[in-house]
Length: 391
Image (cartoon, rainbow, N blue to C red; front, side, top):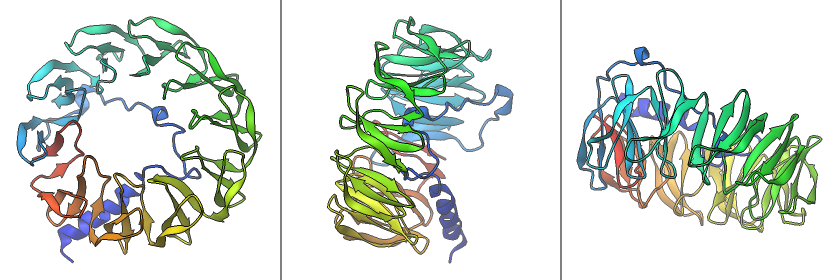
């Protein structure tokens, strides 16, 4: 095997060990996407100008923003975070600096505001014009979601509104960012859920709690998982060793070492028979036994045979699979779209996806055909019509 392709394959295996979407609940993961800790950039003196610069291509594969940045992030709300030397700023879609690179750290825009960090390690928010909308006075803060931003004040957590007012006082021992209008909070080592006005949807009386999904919220009590309704009433008593959120009317639940599917009455409609089981989109649930993966539907019918060494969730009707250390594509009915010919495959976004091919990272369509050749050292996913690439 060509050495370059062999290296890409090894890299793919190591990367994908940690990046499957919708990881099974028995693997370590943040309880919601908003719980992933903010990764602060290192100090300015830790940065060096990159030998290989970053720019952006359009969906035709043309380099429309020249590769002149030391690091970049995807576009969000028409702006992208970029690094020049040891400082971060923002560019617009024309590739010109719209907000000067003067910050120790910067994060993508969310709901019209972007977090920035000073070299005194204080965090605040800027608007699209680059003006400071919320002063840089906070030791810790997260992005705005549902009109609220989590902040830490004297080891307690609360939430700012868009004016910078602490609209939900910092009285919680722990909190997550809002997700679909709900945030998880902790007091006295117990968890509950609040709304954007700070009202309790679920009181802080559980060992763990997750955001509502399809009208039910997962809770954990005395080592068992159950579900409460929108009134905070327990409707499926804690009886499962673990569980995941309801999707399309069903939720994975674990009894002993095996997983099955339950309905909203807490009854198993697919008996516990799998080592792993998680919702994969498109009315499918990925399952695993004996290190082989496939998919079932809500009735338990095996619609994607368990022939794969790894299988990832569906995006736009297509899922990457691994067989003998190479990757291909399969549809939701189990039809093989491509043989395992890629060193790595990523989820589809707007009809195209990244894939590791001979020569580097390319973009493919849903037939597995290369639509943007591997002309760059590295490439990241498209967002808002642009993909970061490294020359």
